[in-house]
Amino acid sequence: MAEILTPDICVIGAGSGGLTTAAASAAFGVPVVLIERGRMGGDCLNYGCVPSKALLAAAHHAAAIREAPRFGVSAGEPQIDFAAVQRHVADVIATIAPNDSVERFEGLGVTVLKASAAFVDARTVSAGGRLVRPRRFVIAAGSSPLVPPIEGLAETPHLTNETIFGLTTCPEHLVIIGGGPIGMEMAQAHRRLGAKVTLLDGETALGREDADLAAVVLDRLRAEGVTIEERTRVVRVAGEAGRIQVDVERRDGSTATIEGSHLLVAVGRSPNVEGLNLEAAGIDYDKRGITVGRDLRTSNRRAYAIGDIAGGPQFTHLANLHAGLVVRAILFRLPIRTPRDTLPRVTYTDPPLGQVGLTAVEADAQGITAEVLTWPYGENDRAQTERRTEGLIKLVVGRRGRLVGAGIVGHAADEITNLLSLAIGKGLTVGDLRDFVSPYPTLSEIGKRAATSYYVPYTRRPFVRRAIAFLRRFG
Ligand SMILES: Cc1cc2nc3c(=O)[nH]c(=O)nc-3n(C[C@H](O)[C@H](O)[C@H](O)COP(=O)(O)OP(=O)(O)OC[C@H]3O[C@@H](n4cnc5c(N)ncnc54)[C@H](O)[C@@H]3O)c2cc1C
Ligand SMILES: NC(=O)c1ccc[n+]([C@@H]2O[C@H](COP(=O)([O-])OP(=O)(O)OC[C@H]3O[C@@H](n4cnc5c(N)ncnc54)[C@H](O)[C@@H]3O)[C@@H](O)[C@H]2O)c1
Image (cartoon, rainbow, N blue to C red):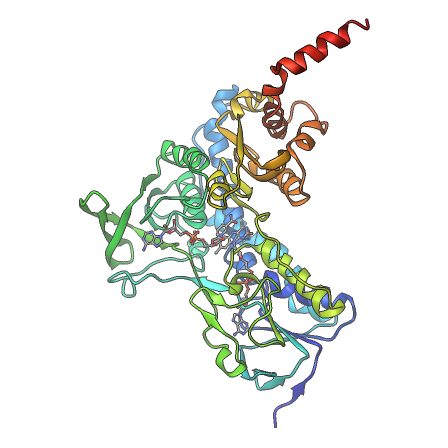
């Protein structure tokens, strides 16, 4: 008879969401079982955020060397040892890995089972020959690369985010299907590290972003030599390792065959529902993931689903936020309502593109009467000193000056997005963004300048001018 564990909480998946849930629960002394079938740390540490940002960091160094002569500094064409670049990526992962390790979590008092979890019934999960029957389940099993139904893809060697960081030589010509954040980040990283890159998108690249902001990133990638073809459908792929043919059909009806050395598929994610036997637990799901309400509860009242598998936006910070909310609900019976329309996101190209809350188009679709304030990087003194003048900020301002959205593309826009996220998350107004003191010269001043522009029409109002004239009489 299998051993039965009866913790308070059973967490399935040791990625961003699962690890945060387990660590936070264990910190309160609550018994937790954490089940992971693959590498501790999940996608973010092993195949996602961390390796992609580490690869981009190397690529940005190469770009900085190429750009240096503009500053009167010369270093020649950068010499890129691609195997050493990948060793740097692996080293960054290895440095962070102890934080997510079995040893660390066991040290926190968590029971870690390295096995695949599958539901047996509504109250029980089986993993590695043991049964776990907790008070609550938290399903944080994540997502995997979506494999689109393209003719020939299954038989043709191709890369995904799970394999691309294992390359030890730079692809001669990397063809990327998909112009979302993965496709765009990988396109720039590989181009800067010496590859020829062609990116194909069936619709528009960075299509979820504000079109003016996305255009800045697309222009930069194109200027660096990335070929980006939008509204281009991949109809067939064929070939062998090192010689891949990609047949495309463009929206204008023309067709072409693109020859590349490597193919990366980055067309979205598929939730890891297979193998969990969710039917046995009465947990509903569809192709987007497990069905949850804003309280993150599934159709089984004992089970919550968080992170990528919960069918919403897919970000590490959202998985972490979900984890915190679920722990509060389980431990303290506090009600959960996942926040709407305040989530930040960043695409870490150079320049990076950040968005918090609603874009102007989304505000309009929600029937919100909004004013859009923009300010260009070129009008910011720090951007001039750094010679990084491409980019702009857009503030979307609703009734009574409340900030309902902000998007920014340009140098250090990733970090500036934090300030905008604080402002929008706390329900601040355009006046708040105007009034705080921003040290000079910093790039963040760009938000303040955009906010100040909201008041320009007030300075011209006859009433305001008359009031100033009246007050002048008093000396
Ligand atoms: C290339 C790439 C770059 C990214 N960059 C960023 C970024 O810069 N910023 C950002 O916020 N987000 C980024 N993301 C998204 C981010 O990685 C995910 O949103 C995040 O990892 C989701 O966390 P999670 O806990 O839901 O799932 P995961 O991290 O995927 O963890 C799920 C875990 O569950 C395990 N598992 C699955 N099924 C079972 C089972 N039956 N039994 C036991 N274990 C199971 C898996 O092995 C996995 O370890 C990126 C993603 C990719 C692919
Ligand atoms: N910086 C970040 O935060 C970051 C970075 C990478 C990934 N992620 C997360 O990972 C998730 C997945 O990213 P992604 O880039 O794979 O997916 P995505 O869904 O964001 O973008 C996929 C792109 O592929 C295109 N596409 C879809 N099917 C296609 C086809 N058959 N042919 C050609 N083009 C096609 C779409 O038009 C879209 O532009 C994202 O939702 C994001 O949340 C985040």
